[in-house]
Image (tube, rainbow, N blue to C red; front, side):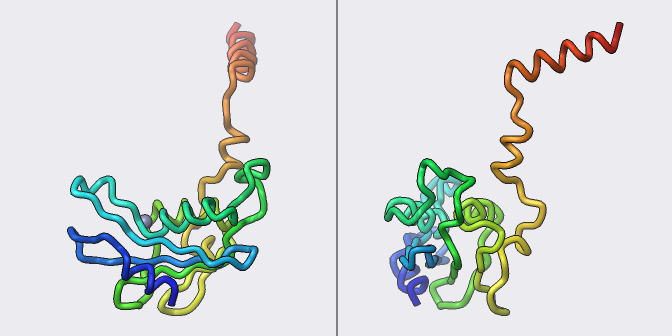
Length: 151
Ligand SMILES: [Zn+2]
């Protein structure tokens, strides 16, 4: 219902596909978003982008202190076209929603709710960044170790 109402406000003069998204935040708030197209096409914002922005702007998103490692702020999301029928989030938005709701986030589909981890298996997350980030000290240690091994 909220997603369909959001779709009514979409700005989609180019594709003609109005999209609305509504999400239930952990604190009980419902946040919404709609797609906003642009003449450049590439700058078009999906409805889920607006939803995640609204999640944070409303204060229902993860606290800055908790960051990406904090508890998921989003519990469930519905994305619909202007006709009210479900649409699945695009790949970019699945990644965006993952950080807002985690793999257990329920995404409404034509066949009922599906966990996001099913729609986005083997996802890249903030954990990958933390565990693989290479800082100067690590790089120097690795280079020294490789130099010793090559002697
Ligand atoms: Zn998208």
